[in-house]
Length: 200
Length: 200
View 1 (tube, rainbow over the protein chains, first blue to last red):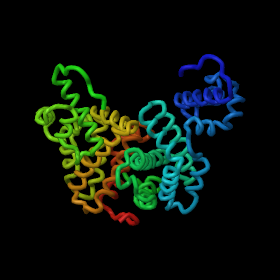
View 2 (cartoon, rainbow over the protein chains, first blue to last red):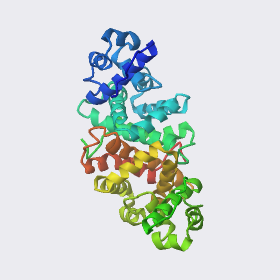
View 3 (cartoon, helix red, strand yellow):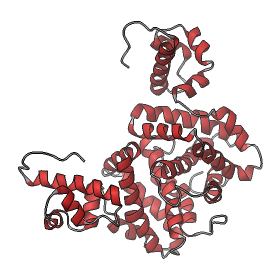
């Protein structure tokens, strides 16, 4: 990271420095091993200031990713309900976020993750620690199977986002959300909870 | 497109101009509506020279995409065989290409398509006209259902590529190919040939 030189006249500048430090430390160490202390050290500020501006490490991570939503809030909400419809609900949730005004930020995030190794690392940490880990916990999936199931879900969900919002392949690009929920939900369900012969 | 100025000393330079013109015309008009004549006009060369260097429009398209493989050769080969295992064979084929030395070029292509609107258009044309159209024809899929089925396959396959090769989410990133074939093949099969209630 290139350090800024000279004075930092206002809070915005300090916040920006903290966010840059956070991106660097999260990308280098991963979410679990990154600490507020290390991020504060990188930004050359007091750790208390990081807490003051951003709250928890999770909130700081979301801010550093420019995440338009907080998975801690929406994932449990989406997955509550009949277990055998969790796949459909997850697809519905994701389309709801991406089809909303917040989706623009999410598309920018995907584009950036594809072209930049560090953003890709952040995106991976985000998907694994913020989205999939919660989804797996919410559904009570076997701990040994969880990482594979979660990553398989990621293949389907990331591909849906890429094809609908980035590559814009028709008719998926302009299909009604519920048609995609019906088409893709069962694949996600299979990855989440069904038997996967040849895998486990 | 920024036109080059000055002399074009050798064939390489002319070929490069043709490739740049081809990218522009394919992205603007789509594969079907782009003509060798229009590409030659854009490159300010004789159409016969385009044919001389690149052969057919399809070959020129593959060259302009830096495609490491020719889908016309490998898709029919992959899909020949029992219809109810086509999904597995398609996933196996794709992993075979991406896991090979040619995969590096394919990863570069995906990265580029995500960050650049014009490359995204080219990628979409490539997926739709070169990969999916062939796959659908090979399997004799109903013409009305084919575009939806093909785009659904694209969501799963693009997502697999993104998660395994670009984001590198474990354990998918380093899973043996056959484990992924077993896990993801049935989803692709469903999109290709099975009933999709709520979609059709």
